[in-house]
Length: 193
View 1: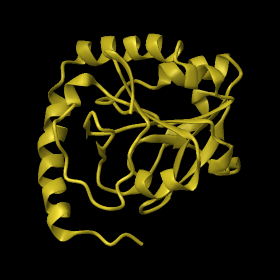
View 2: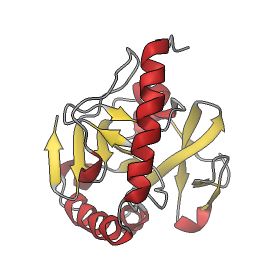
View 3: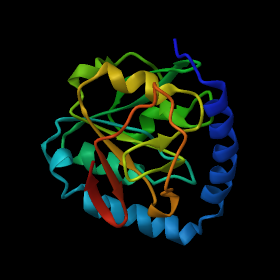
């Protein structure tokens, strides 16, 4: 159970509202081109190339289009697991064989239709993680459900943030349970933390 600092919670809430508006205002062509550049970068990235199993979110309209990466990984024979919401704040990694295995979940985000193929997080090699915004130090502002902060400590995988460079901020309010990533991949390239 998280012990949430009420001051930090309020700061995050106000900042999240502002940054989600910014995310929605990003030009559609920028998001499309940036997603394509991120795909070109990721397929040459060492952690992706060596990973037998990847954990990756399914991007929404305002996020990096991860369907490009998912299709590439499946075509290369990688095991692909994506988040499945189980209950508030809790998700599991569930294997898919194609994009057709996905359906809108509790939050309208595509996720596996069932949880038959749950994968132990220790079997994941690399995880590609979403955000609303991020800092160059590897902190991210999520959507407020705490799903990733609960999931990430469960495995020893490489944590790579996928984001548009336009969503980088200088500073974020950070609570003691906020999980850092090991690297950040934007359309401008990859940076190890």
